[in-house]
Length: 189
Image 1 (cartoon, rainbow, N blue to C red):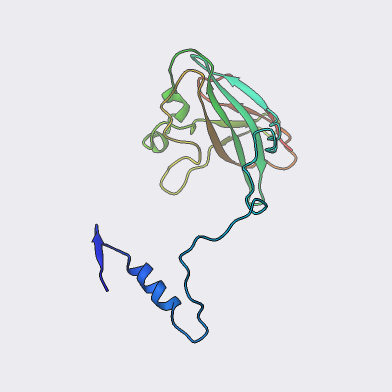
Image 2: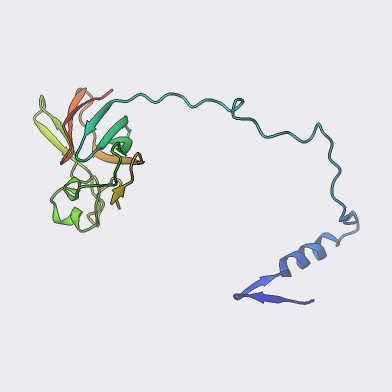
C-alpha cells in the first residue's frame, strides 16, 4: 500500500481502506467503476427564480435615524422563556458616501467599550414602570449585541441584534434609545 503525505495528512489511505473493506465478506458485490445511468425523469432541473418561494414580508417595528445617513430598522422584538428580550433588525447607510458607525453607540461603560464598537449603548426605557434596561453583558463584560461595527458603504446594510432583560409581561411599550440615533417607541407583545 502506498501512502502520500500532504501537509501532514493522509491522502488515498482512507480510499484504499474503504475499497479493501468493501471487497471483504462472502456477500460482497463487485465494485463497478462505471457511472450510474441516469434518466431524464431522475434529473430535476434547478428551480428558476420564478418558481422559488417568495420571502415573507418583514414588518418594520420602527426606523431610528442616526447621523450621516445611518438608520436602524428594527423588525423583531421577541421575549423568550428565559426572561430575555431580543431585538433584531438592520443598520443601514442610506447616504451616497461611506459612513462610520459612531463610537458613542457602544455606550460609555469601560467594560463594554474595551471590546470594540458595538450597539452596547442601547437602552430600553419603561416610563410607566420607571425602569431602564441596558444591553446584557457576558461574564467577560462583552455586550450581547452585534460587535465589530466600523463603517458601512453607500447603500449597504448589516444585520444587528441586541439582547436585554425582558420587561414584565404587563409592559407593552418602551422607548428604544441608542446614542446618536433618535429615540423610537417599541411595542412589545
